[in-house]
Structure formats: structure tokens, C-alpha cells
Image (cartoon, rainbow, N blue to C red; front, top):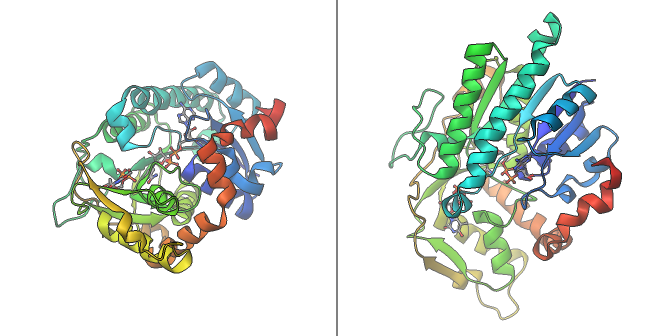
Length: 355
Ligand code: NAD
Ligand code: TYD
């Protein structure tokens, strides 16, 4: 049985990865999460109560706490997802992004390096540090072209530049100290348990509440959408079989304008949960001021991970988005706890002294 540290395991993607690993592997998971506003242990469902899931409410900037965890649960690898992740928040307050995404990654790298240096030769050779990053580090595309592993970094927002900085630190730790690292750069994720600040859950929840659906600018910016479970499967594959020192781009081959996404959501809600007044949800669409520095288009060429590791997304946008709308309709408790703030007390109620 492997022991793997997962940082940010109470977040949207980290919780999907832990649900997958508890269901489909025999690994012991040490979930290291500070539980910021974005951390929600309720998202782990039954996996959160499994004996192979160990939760530690820890800030990745806290070196002493990380050293204690490495000593207590000597891991075979680390999958690093903890981050501040929302572009709009990074525009209004970049400080936490610098602290967690850059200083936190540096602190985690140093704690990992100290632990890894003390392993025997076989342990050092088998160890992996997998850094989970975004395609936003590559900047913004025009109407043509796609990001690949060779694309030069050109981040534009405080979020993407802090992620780019963390990617560079990870590469430097590989090159300078020989730490066996892997980096994945993924496109926009959607699916269950996403915090309703991001486009898709925000639109679903606003629509259900009869609130305006705020579309930035003309709604013609393009994102390449991937279902979170497809991302989680890709992360497991890269962690297990990727070449150390390599990077992999992950994407869903699902380019959509924001307007197309919102119209799809409205049409699904009209079908699955029609409004009581008989109006179409699309009547709630509202054009608002554009995001400053708004990246125009992202698109991923995911042929390397397909060719080298045999990964393909299982969901199309059409299948994944319908399941996602259905999930939000079927889980009013999760939504109510997030909206009331009750999710922030989940740890005391369910983990008590274990944190
Ligand atoms: P999220 O905001 O939902 O979750 C982030 C998690 O990290 C939360 O549980 C939070 O409590 C935790 N965290 C924040 N600061 C911390 C700290 N200092 N110490 C410990 N834990 C801390 O984010 P997400 O959407 O799940 O993204 C996870 C990772 O994947 C991030 O690194 C993000 O950059 C990357 N990513 C996200 C997307 C996407 O579409 N959401 C796409 C590509 C890559
Ligand atoms: P978001 O989910 O914040 O992801 P990212 O900025 O990392 O791509 O936004 C996705 C797209 O949707 C982006 O082009 C901004 C746009 N958007 C809106 O038009 N309205 C909104 O209320 C939000 C949150 C995003």
C-alpha cells in the first residue's frame, strides 16, 4: 500500500481525486488542507470517513507542521493541488495568491526535499512530486492555435502568474536538486462540488435562485472545458506512469464561448427544473463589465498524454454538463451548507480531534 500526500484535498479537484483514489486504489491518503473558504470536507463524501483517508488541517506555508507530517506518515509521493484558484479574487486581492501559490509551493518543495534526501536510494528513485497546474500559465490565444508542452509561459493575471512562478520553482527543484517532479497543466474543470464563484456553478445557482446571470463583456471568451473526474483520472495516470521531469497538458477538446456555456446551462435547467413562472432561464442573462485583462481564449493540445500514457477524456461536454446540472439539482444540502457557511464547521463536527 502506497502513502500519498495530497495537498488541497478539500478543494474541488482534490476532493474528486481523493474520491477516485479511495474507490479505485488501496493507497493511504494524507490530505493536507488549510480549509480556506474554498475547502469543504463535505465534498469528500464517504471517502472522507474511510480509514485510508487521514486529514490534517495544515497550511502549506507552515514548514514545521509539514516536517511533522513527513515524519509521522512517510509518503511515497506528493500530489500538490493546494492553491488560491480564482482569477477574480486574484484581481481584487493578490496577496494570498503570492503567499500560498508561491511561498507555499516553495515551503512544500523544501520540506519534501529534506524528507526525500533522507530516503534510501530505492526510495529516492521511486519518489514523485506531482505539481498540479493550469493552462493559464501560457497566456491567451487568438482565434487559432493551441497550447502544448512547448508553449512559452506568458501569464497575464495575478492568479496565472503565481501559478507560473510555482511551476518554475518545481522545475528548478528538479534541475538543481534532482527531486523527481512532474507537472500537469490542465484546462478549465467543471463538475460536482465546485465552489460557486466559478462560471458554471455560479450560473446554475443564480439561475435556480432567479438571480441575474452575469456575463463578462460580450461572452465571447473561449475556455476548453474538462470534467473534473477526467482530470482526476489523468492525474492518477501521470502520477503513476508519467516520466519524471516531464510536463503534460490535459484538456477536454471542448472549446466553448462563455455564452455557449450559459445557454447550454439555461436549456438544461429549462428541461430538468423549469421555472415556476414559465419563463426561460435565458431571460436572466445579464451583460456586465468585462474582467480586467480578461484572457480571450484557452485551448489545449492533449496529444502527448494521449500518445504516451493512453489518456482520453471519458465525458464529452454534452454528457458531462448534463450530469453536472443534475448533480447540483440532486444535492441541495451541499449547496445550502455552502451558502449558509455551515460547511466551514464540517471539520469540528466530523473530524474532532483528528485535525
Ligand atoms: P479550489 O480553490 O477548489 O481548492 C483549493 C484547496 O486548497 C482548498 O481546499 C483550500 O482550502 C486549499 N488551500 C488553499 N490555500 C492553502 C494553503 N495555504 N495550505 C493548504 N491548503 C490550502 O481549487 P481547485 O479548483 O480544486 O484547484 C486545485 C488545483 O488545480 C489548483 O492548484 C489550481 O491552480 C489547479 N487547477 C484548477 C483548475 C480549475 O479549473 N479549477 C484547472 C487547472 C488547474
Ligand atoms: P472562471 O470560472 O472564473 O474561470 P477562469 O477565469 O479561470 O477561466 O471563468 C470562466 C470564464 O467565464 C471566464 O472567461 C470568465 C467568465 N465569467 C463570466 O462571464 N461571468 C462570471 O460570473 C464568472 C465567474 C466568469
